[in-house]
Amino acid sequence: MLSTGVLRAHLLAAGLAGRVATSREESLRSYRLFAARDPRVMLGLDPQGGWGEGDVLRLMADRCGVSGDPSYRSGPDVIDPERTLSGLDAFAARLGAAARRRAPVLLGTGHPHRLLGFYAALADALSAVGCLVLTPAQGRCVDITTRFGLRTHILDYVRGVALVRELGVSGAGRETGAHTHSPLPVRAVLESAVEGGRPLPELVVGDHGWVCGAGQLGIEAIGLADTDDPALFVGEAEGQVSVAVPLDDAVRSDYYRPLTRYVLNRACLSR
Image (cartoon, rainbow, N blue to C red; front, side, top):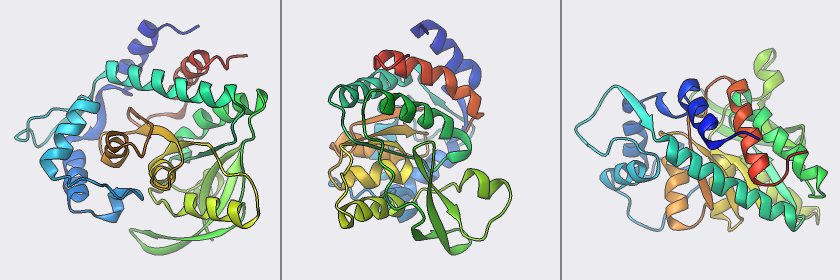
């Protein structure tokens, strides 16, 4: 069993919390864009409240532990490890509740290079206790706007985790999947499930548009989010997202393994 103290030390040593790689400039840019309702950072969320840049900064200071000082404009950003631990506990509680009722679940990531292993371990554990891990719309095309323009992506599943691959890309990007913030993949998955008369998820687990896109449609959603992903925390504050765990979402993939052990243990899913 991984103790809270050991995990806290790992979060700080691995840069998952404490001083993180996401810069203050990146975070503030995202808060500014969110206040302007820029779709690149909304992740499929349609907030009910009027979130100005200052409102978003205050929320992120409360939920993540970033500096609430608006005059702090550059340098490293910070995540409070206690908030990460609290978020992981809440995340595990929701996961455990879904496992106990054998709920159908959907797992999806816009960070396959980093987080695929974390979600795949959860999918394995949920499947082992009788949850239906959903995989609708495999092979379906989704057109997603990227910084290079509109690109066609293919929905795929790896070890029960949904991701997208850019059509025509070969090499590492093709093997692991594409990085995306878009809510369009989860919408396509849910639409396909309805069209095919297949079960809808009672819980969506993931990040970026997978969480906000599902939560906006009224499906319980939990996920991981960095300091430049304010949409998940706004969604949590407004009730569309059940749990948003603050952490750096782009460190080495093996650094998330202790988090997997901790969450599975807390959710009573360890084998």
